[in-house]
Length: 610
Ligand SMILES: Nc1ncnc2c1ncn2[C@@H]1O[C@H](COP(=O)(O)OP(=O)(O)OP(=O)(O)O)[C@@H](O)[C@H]1O
Image (cartoon, rainbow, N blue to C red; front, side, top):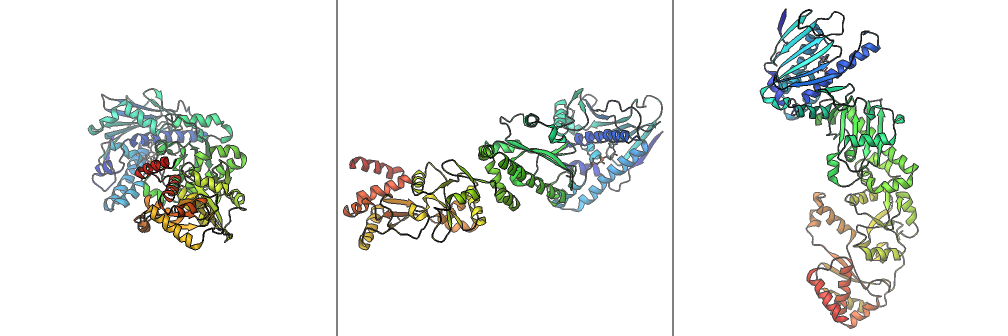
C-alpha cells in the first residue's frame, strides 16, 4: 500500500530557492546526512544505556557508498531508525516546515537579513536536494515488529510513503539508508575522490566510525575530547601534526580548553612559531560542533588577536550554519570569545611564573600575540601587563615594572618624567645607542611592526612615562635635566658658527642651531624630532586622516652644532666650508642619510684632507 501526499507547505518551489541560496557550498549536504546518521546512532546508544533498548547494538558504523553508474550516493546507519509515522513527522513536517519557514522569511528581506536567516536555520536533511533530483529513505525502527518504511520525494511538495512487513523490500537490519539520486548538474559528487575529500574535511573527527567505500575515514576520539590529565606532550604534538601535516615547526605550547558552564566548549589552541604572516593564513583554527567540522573562518568566535593561533574549538553552542552577522549577535559566541581571551592570558601568566627562562626564550615568537592582544583588548592588557616583556639592546628582557625600576635612577627628567629610550634599528642607529649608553642610559629595542602602536599604548597607560627614540635629540637633550653645560664660545661666536654651518650645508630641510654639549660629544649631530617623526610615520603607514598635514610637510631634521667641541673653533677659523661640511657629512653618515652624489663628494673631500 502506497501512501502519497502533499507535504503541508504553502510555498511553491521552495526547492530551487533553497538550492540556489541556502548554502553557497553544496558539498555540505554530505556533512548534514552523515551527522544525522551519527545522531541516530548516538540516540540508540543512549536508549540502550537507559535500558529502553535491550537488543543487540551490533556494529555501529555509518557507511557511505557511491555508485557512479547508477548515479547514487547512499548514507546508511545502524541507528534507531524511523517508522513511517516518524518519517512523516520528522522529515515531512520538521525538515520541510523548516525549509518553508526559511523561504517565507527569505523572500522579503534584503541581503543582510537573508544572511541572518540562513544562520538560524539548520535545514539538515533538506540540503540533500541541493545535489539530488530525488531522495529515498529506507528505514527500520529499533522498535519491536517495526515495518520497513520507504519514502521518496523529488524535491517538490509531493512525497510517497510505503511500508513493508514482508517481501524483498523488508530491510534486514535496523537503521536508515538515505539514497540520493544525483542530479545532472551535480556530477562532481559522483567522484570518489571528491566525496572522500568532503568526508575528510567535515567528518574526520565524528564520534561514530564512518566508512567510505570500505575504508574508515575518521578518528572517533580526537584528543580534545579527552581529559588533559590523560594526555602527554607527545599526544598534543602528534595531534598538531595530524591537523597540519604541512607544518614544519613544532608548536611552542598549547592550551586545552574545557568548560561546560555557562556554555559548552572544548578544544586545543596551539601557539605556533612565528615564521611569516602567510603561515597563519594556512593553518587556521578549525571550528567544530560536536565533532562535526563547521568552518575555519573563526572570526568573531576567537578574538582577532588570537586568530594567529592554530588548533580546534568545539562547541555545540555555536550554531551549525555559521553566518557572520548571526555569530556577531550571538550571546554565547561573545562569552566564548571572552573566555578564550582569559584562558590565553592565564596560560601565558602561568608559563611566565613557572618558567621564566623558557618564557623568555619564547618571547620572540609570542611577543607579537601579546602586544597585539594588549592593543586590541583592554582586559587582556590588564592581565598581560605583568608578563609582557621589554627587550634592551644588550639582549636582557624586563617586565614593564622591572624596567621602570631599572632606569629609575638615571632616566628621570627635570619634571620627574621617566624617559624610556628606544631604537628601531640597533645597527643603523648604533652611534646614538652608543652615546646614550655612554651616558649610563639604557636603550630598548622596538623593531616590530606593531611597536609604534605599542609604544603609544604604554605612554597612555603608564604614568609620567614617555618614550624617545635615541636619535630624536642629542644625547644631552634626550632626557632634559636641570644642569646645563656652559658654552665656551661667546654669544657672537655662537651666532657666527650657526651662520657658517647653515651656509656650508645650504639645505632648507636642515634646521641648524648651536648648543653647548659636552666636549666629548660629536661636533655636529643630526636628529629628528620624536613628535614629527611619529606623525610622519603614522601617515606613511596609513594612520588617521588628520595626519595628512604632517605627511605633506617635507622631512625636516635638527642639526645641532656642539659649541664645546674642539672642532667648533676650527669651523669658525676655517670660515666655512670644509670643516663644517666634513663634520656635517659625518653626522649624516651616522644617521644613514649620506647617499648619492653627497657621498661621493664626501669620499673625495676626505681623501684630499688625508
Ligand atoms: N538517519 C536518520 N535516522 C533517524 N532519524 C533521522 C535520520 N535523519 C533524519 N532523521 C530525523 O529527521 C529529523 C530532521 O532532520 P534534519 O536534518 O532536517 O534536522 P535536525 O537533524 O533535527 O537538525 P539539523 O538542522 O541540526 O540537522 C531529525 O531530527 C531526526 O529526527
